[in-house]
Image 1: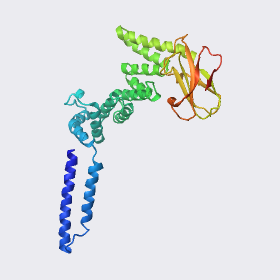
Image 2 (image 1 turned 30 degrees about the vertical axis):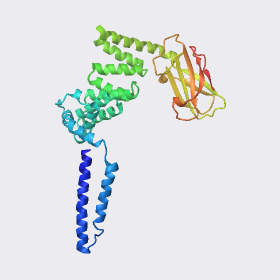
Image 3 (image 1 turned 120 degrees about the horizontal axis):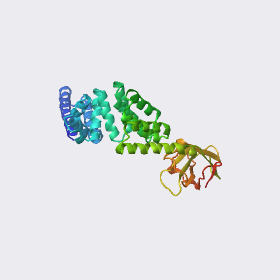
Image 4 (image 1 turned 135 degrees about the horizontal axis):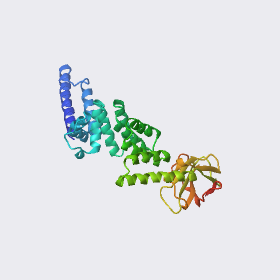
Length: 339
């Protein structure tokens, strides 16, 4: 608000000065004010009015206050120093804005890493990835930066390991083979991605160094879970379903899902595809699984939803096929009828 008042006063003063000059010039030449100075005066008046109505950004004042309050903290972080202010008392979102502004003028690896950690804390993995990549340009040999980038990539993939994330983790393990944080990230993300042999390898590596107490117990639980999932993977490697429809146009979006009988919410597995013709055969594969493979003997059902709109979401798929029980092992595609 103070900035708006100062700008308005300045424009008013300039307008008055120009008005006076305009009158003097007019009286000197013909006794009547001319247009030479009237036009700039009018422009200034209109500019003042426009700024008052639309030009003032309400975020400008708070932003400048934050810049003033946390500029020194940001600069100390960029320089790799311990800030004078206690970090816990500085709002993370405000510090991120100021730190990014300072990094644009004074880039440093530690500064970009700190910004990435803040974005990670705020639940913004895309921004954390961007900051981590900028940090790696300045310091490619820092394990913490590689793991920050890996974590950001994994979070963007719903907790599942990606090839790029694995490359970042592998680079850390190449120089620090016993880095527990890297092995733990690899074990958990590989398990979520259904890459159970890799997860088993990571759990086993951790257990070699931490097989005692509560830590050893939790690691053995993770290892056993990955082994169970690997044993079940072959049973659910291929689940085909043939979907038929009467008087429905093709070219829409079809969702085939698998869930526990009577359950709601997220299915065990789901596949989305655009249908060219009916009947359409869709196969659920391990890449379609959203949750761990169920135990042997679990009551499962398979169903489908459809919308004639291509590229639509599942919430828009109002046409459905009644779920039917899934009996393992399958002797052929399950038949589903949209209606």
